[in-house]
Amino acid sequence: MGSMGDRMPHAPDMSLVIAGVGLRAPIILAAGTAGYVDEVKGVVDLRGVGALVTKSITREPREGNPPWRIIDGPAGMLNAIGLANVGCGGSCSRSSRAPRRWVFR
Image 1: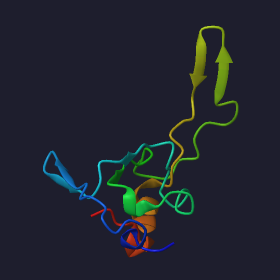
Image 2: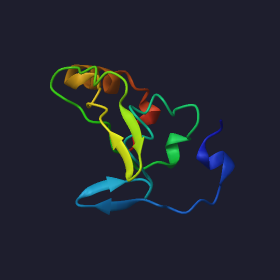
Image 3: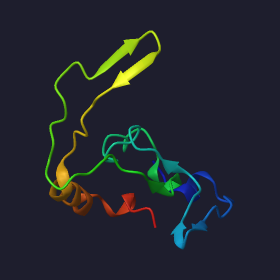
């Protein structure tokens, strides 16, 4: 992939500030759809993303609940994933290994 400048030489500046935090774009990837970013790096051009809402992060890693974790019912769906995540240390480790181009600022 070329740089955004290569594809859109006259792209408008989409940067903004929300609650004192500067974002380069108004697009924020939602938790659950983007996971820890590495799951979408080959699908989404992260240069067009302003921020990412992470999955839940607990102090220690968690496996989450055993299957069945999602069950359809007559009144809707029951969800009991159990906050499966890599924990604080795993999350920080993933973040520190992220290529510089993934940093959203």
